[in-house]
Amino acid sequence: MPRSRREIMASGEWYSCLGEEFEALRRAARRACHQHAVMDPDARGACAPLLADLITIGRDCRIEAPFHCSYGINLTLGDRVYLNTGCVVLDSAPVTIGAHSMLGPGVHIYCADHHRDAEKRHAGIERALPVTIGRDVWIGGGAIILPGVTIGDSAIVAAGAVVSRDVAPGSRVAGIPARGL
Image 1: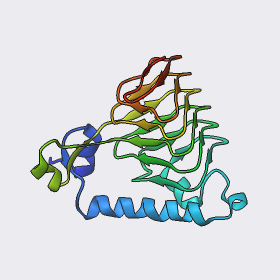
Image 2: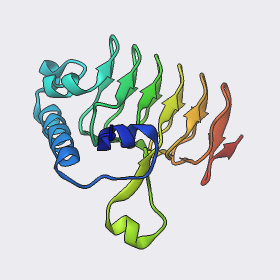
Image 3: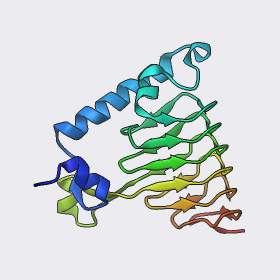
């Protein structure tokens, strides 16, 4: 039996992100992020209702507006996670953020790894690699987390760092590309 494009995306294999199935999912996420951005902050709670329908969210989380995710359905937040203003999560693969982790303003998390061949990129060919952020992690403002990265428990990522490799638990990294301190 042939696999669906969503099953291929979930497998980490190369697939085309173009087409109505993926566009409908992205449209739902855009609507949810828009609702989140325009709600009264006191009425919003952790996040707007449409966004809460997409994201798997733990207790006492807070997502500041504006916030953007590409799908939302692949994003899981542990208890007491805090995402500061301007965070972007391009969740074509699972993104898991562990309990008590904090992301500074403008942190970006990317799962899409676009094909190196220009013709294949034109056809929307990419693969989706998961990002895992452990418990008690602090990621400074403006940091970028690239596809396939795991950041271990209690690690600290400095503001502006570009994380292209796994970060060991309890370590601190900074720079472009991020390296241990």
